[in-house]
Image (tube, rainbow over all chains, first blue to last red):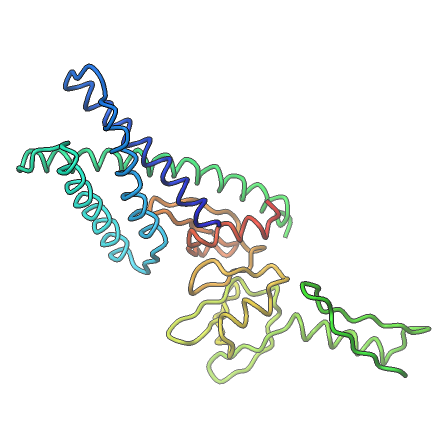
Amino acid sequence: MKKIGEYVKWYVYITTSILMVVALIFGLYGAEELPGETLWQILVSGFATTLLTVVMVYVDTATVMGSVFKFVGHYLALCATMIVLGGRFGWLNLNVRGIAMMMCAVAAVYVLAFGAYYIIDLRSAKQINRRLKEKYGDE
Amino acid sequence: MKITIETPKPGEEDEIILRCASVDDRLLKLIQSFRNEKDMLTGYVDDRIQKLALGDIFYFEAVDNKVYAYTAKQVYEVHKKLYEIEEEYANTDFLRISKAIVVNVSKITYIRPMLNGRFEAKLKNDEKVIISRQYVPALKEKLDL
């Protein structure tokens, strides 16, 4: 049940981040409105990328190099997923420029979603630290 | 003296109740030995065997199929598995925080999140240990949060 809760949290952060990046791209390219099917495509993209992310978050690495490999691997897996999905949804042209733009968009979503999660973690840490001080402060 | 042994209900802690008219020396020694047994652990360092007070241990770590107990200044090998320690001391301040570490929560000064999704705990001897994300809910539960 806790894992489902964790999945839902990540899904909300990632899907909201994708929506923000898509809105930004639409704004930059002067599109007047977001087509209805794009919203469903964002939800599907969010579902697929959340699965990859939840698996990655729970993989423990013992070394700094292991962490670097984990993050690079995760980012490349996200890019591959989004290039395949984006290609099917007609979000990108399958050429070097299209793929590079999709990789930039994935990086932007990555920073937004992990940034949001980091802020939540900071709040959790603050709560735990306050309790530690109350319970064991004098020891 | 009559001795009765009862099995506790599921979820209840083991408990010793003494019913006696007065507490004599013999009984006091018995109580003390129970207390010591629970709070002490045998540690091995070089060729020495030493009794360790549970409260002095900062954390246990499993490395290459061996388990070590870390006190403020010394590291001892402990002839127990990490899961046994986790289970045996579940009702104390000890808590599993990663695949390889069981920490004494009372020895944590503070924790902070890391960019890789894990948390880092700074201990009162200035050592740092990593808390895996999946053990954070258990830590919150331990602290009644």
